[in-house]
Image (tube, rainbow, N blue to C red):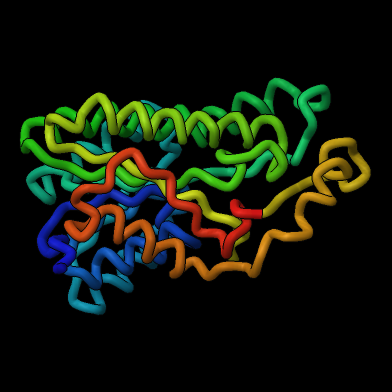
Length: 253
């Protein structure tokens, strides 16, 4: 089945590097027009340049997506440039410090929840009216193994990704009759530039250590991107509310 992505308007967040970059390039290869959203202006512009050099159509919007003004700019730019939004990929995210709950300070909690959960909520809320007007749309969120279990990250990150899973499923139920699908990938370990600043002697990292024995091999960002593009494509037209592990079987252990 054809992907049906040719000419579609796609927003990818966190697209300046890692999984987001790989997804932006993969969508462009399918003929989609891509808005590259990232906090890092240099990274976002570099991805736009890659897409344009390959003959594709892309535009960058930079800023912190946990801020409403940036969300508004991303949405307005996509609508102006593409005439609407056919696909939204909420991929931007940050790690916590693997902190156990008693060791999580307010700043760590609030920042992780704001970036990983509130930002996808804000952008989805902004984009939904345009999808509803068109009578169609596909939303793909980047959850995590930490959204499926309690042993893959610290308290803040785990809570944020469980929230992403819940948000995805609720979206799928609420808007399926309006032609909108919402799914998520749940990556396992993946080679990206996201770093973890954890004190290995602290309770959280020490307690989590034994649970990383069977994580499977490290995935490439392109493998995660392939799953994202599939879920957004017409090939997944009857897949809605699914959380797809892309983890070499870690979730099955």
